[in-house]
Structures are given as structure tokens and as C-alpha cells.
Amino acid sequence: MANVPTYRHEVKYYECDRMGVTHHSNYIRFMEEARVYWMDVLGYGYDRMEAEGIVSPVVAVSCNYKHPTTFKDVIEIDVEVAGMTELKLSFAYTMKVDGKIVCTATSTHCFLDAGRPVKLSERFPQFYEAIMSVKG
Image 1: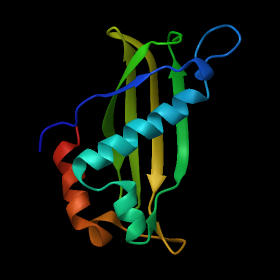
Image 2 (image 1 turned 135 degrees about the horizontal axis):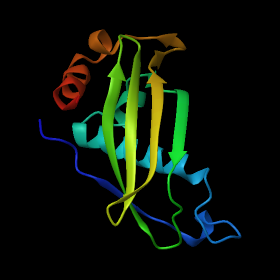
Image 3 (image 1 turned 135 degrees about the vertical axis):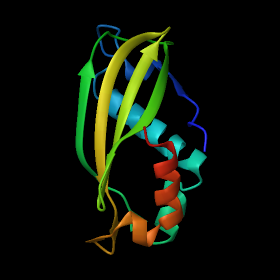
């Protein structure tokens, strides 16, 4: 399977603070937008998983802010699999504006069915294989 295309987010006015820069908390939302897009492209969107009784909470997140972004900037977000175990999946995000890295980030997720951890390879073997096919 080919790599998932880059996700693009245009910074909205309301996402900026009084200094005119994108508020740091919004980058977490941008990560979620990009991750949901990434999973949809692979064919295993959150809507599909939730319909099958699976939820995927965030268990860890980190952001390294390199340069500020402002209203109307188009942030290009590349998502890659940073790591995977039987119970957790980690993503790495590289966010750029005009080719310049503005933020690097990671998030780690588990998968639960009725509050109990599930193994992706057993519960969603096709999704597991799709992830393995794009894993760096």
C-alpha cells in the first residue's frame, strides 16, 4: 500500500491567540484531524471501529513547537506509524508550512472493547496488516 497523502489544515482566525499566533492547544486537534484522515484513507476510520464496539483513547501525547503559525497558514501534516505493540499504536506527526517544520509531535493510543484492551492483530487483522504495510 502506498503512503497516505499529506493532510492539510488552514489555520482559522479563532485558533489564534491575542498575539496572532496559533494557540498551542490547537496542534493536538490538528493531530487528531490528520490521524482520523490517515485511518479513513486506510479504510479503518473511527466510525467503522466505533460501529464495531472499539474506542481508541489517547494514552500519551507530546508536541515540540519549532516555529509559530498564524491565521490562514496552511499546515501540512504527515502522519507515520512511530511504533506498535500488541496493545498500543503510536503515531509521529510532522507539521510544515511552506516546507518549514513548525511542529513535531507524537501520540499513543490503545484500543478498547467494553473498556477492556484488545489486540489489533486479533480484533482487526486487516487493519493491523494495513498499518504494517505503511509502517516506516
